[in-house]
Image (cartoon, rainbow, N blue to C red; front, side, top):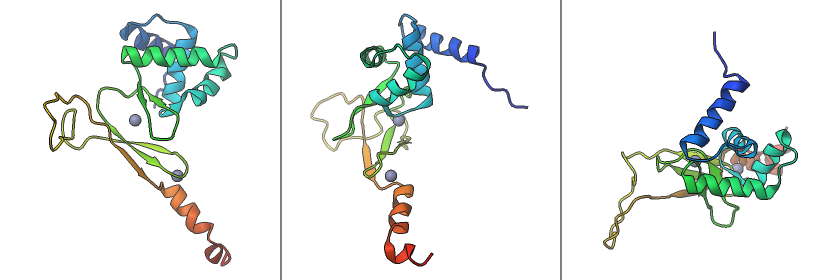
Length: 159
Ligand SMILES: [Zn+2]
Ligand SMILES: [Zn+2]
C-alpha cells in the first residue's frame, strides 16, 4: 500500500526546507516552495498563478521577493535561457543541465554524465577556478516534432 504525504507532512517539509536555508517561514514563502515542487522550471509569473490559487492575497512582487531570497539562500536556482523569462527550480547543487524546446518552451533536466560539478572542463580555463558549468541544449521536443508532422496537410489529409 502506497502512502502519500499528507498536506500537513508537506507543510512541515516546506517549513523545514525554509529553515534549513536560514529563511524565516512565512505563508507566502511556503506557498512559493510548494509551487516550485508542483512546477519545476516555472517562471515567476507561472509560480504566481499557482500561489494565487491557495493565497489569493499574494502579490506578484512578493513572489519575486521570495524567489530572490530563495536564490540568495541557495534554496532555489534560477536558470536564464536566452530570450526567455528566468525559470526557477528547487534542484540545486548538482550542476545539472537543461534541454529546452525552442518551439513550446518545455524544459527537461539533463544529469551530468561525468561525476561532480563542474562536469565540463574548458579547453583553457584562463586560470579561473571553475565552479559551475551551465549547458542549455536547444531543440524540438517529441510532442512538437509529432505535432509538426501531424499538422502537415499531406499527412493529416490521409486520415
Ligand atoms: Zn515543444
Ligand atoms: Zn532543472
